Length: 87
Image 1 (tube, one colour):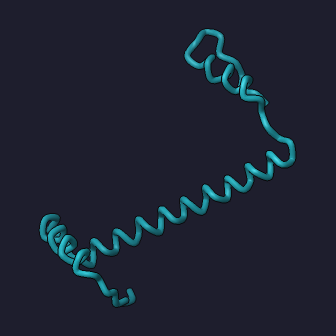
Image 2 (tube, helix red, strand yellow):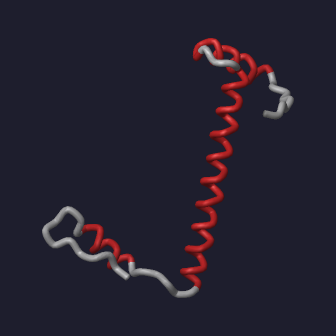
Image 3 (spheres, helix red, strand yellow):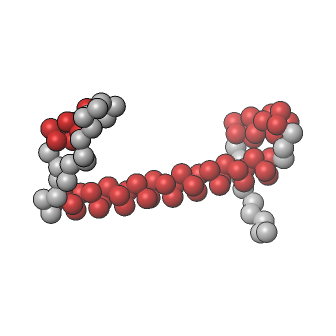
């Protein structure tokens, strides 16, 4: 494991210290957890952005489904006459 030095402003250090004591965890542990969560969130954001770009390309290529068809399909959920997903 490598060591990285981080400067933490007082307005973050004090709550971090309090949380560390409250949870009986080291500040290092809490900082590592925060970084892991941030990286995971960024990865998810990147994935969603890729999905958005692919969706935009699909729309540009004329591949879309009419809103009325989608709504009819969704409205059929939970009924005895459930429709197949529109294509």
